[in-house]
Length: 259
Length: 256
Image (cartoon, rainbow over all chains, first blue to last red; front, side):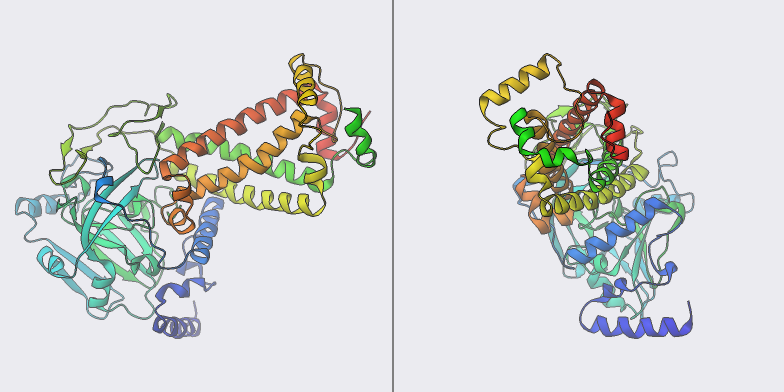
């Protein structure tokens, strides 16, 4: 990518951001490093087409349905349900012990790091996040496996946190890292979506262990695997990152899980 | 069926299948086989069907299909109730390592779906503009007359299948083709989109089918209908001279 190309794109995105459309720059073609993978794999090209088509046809803030409390259902906890369990799936030798120590202390020392292409990198305690304007939503969790469940989630919109740290004009993706060996990335349209929240509450109580204590992502516009649990760190980036083996993409799943 | 043939003597004089019909037939055949195969792989990771918005291993199923090791695997820790939730909602951690090939399965399913939707749209467009759908595929009132239908059912039941290639088609044949092309396949697209969290909500499709799990169950029923159609379609080809039928659909030759 040339400097000139970068500058043009930055200027354009900056202009679009003024119109409240940080993600509109996505429609720009060109440099493959800045896009979800579209070459060398026929399946990824199909995923890319689905991603572009959905972004083109559905309004940016197209809300998913919110339900009544009476529609809350039972819900399975799958994947990693305890990052401290060395025999569990997605155990991280790097962060598993740290998670166990934080949990012993009821996550009093837990901090969410927010960094990358932001003006004021910061970290937030659970109390910091709970002090921010909260959003409670009763939504449906749709798993790629085929099942679904309705639960009530309480948390702070990711948008609020991103506004506090101040995303830079060229920022286009938000990468979420967990205390297990899991990470996922989303684009700015989903990151700034009003229903994308960092949830600490579930069904009127603190999020139980199996569902991502103390903080998990809720990306309601996509399938469940993008709503990662046990959040540790958020990194705002200008370029697309595959996140290697940490992500669904690394395991062969589509990066965009809007369908 | 002499009366139908008389109406369409002009068609009969042409190649049995037009070039665009042949191209789209095989394109859609490939897409449908891929969709059916990958759809089965996707279903195998959670072989339970429900009605409404929700359904998972902790709620009752409408149908359970014994098609993978995930069938009634029962690998869960004891259920824990949510003290503050209604309906006695519970949660339980899964301990069982399920069969799940949805990484490539889902992506290939959607790739084939794209081909199917594009080819299907082209088929409906050309079919409408040329009058092919009206003249060749959709049953006429005469086709649907009880006597005509009963006679065609009796002929099929006796396996008296004429060794005839291309249109004009018989009443049952038209009902099968138009049912798949005009009802089943559009329904598959609609129920497929209805399962998407955002598309289902934005288009109203999720509400139309009374929930994403209902849409998933109807999607499976549509698959079963199309599977049955393909089975009968292939048997009919085998019973009516497969070499000539294949030559007609591949090369467009009437053959003798």
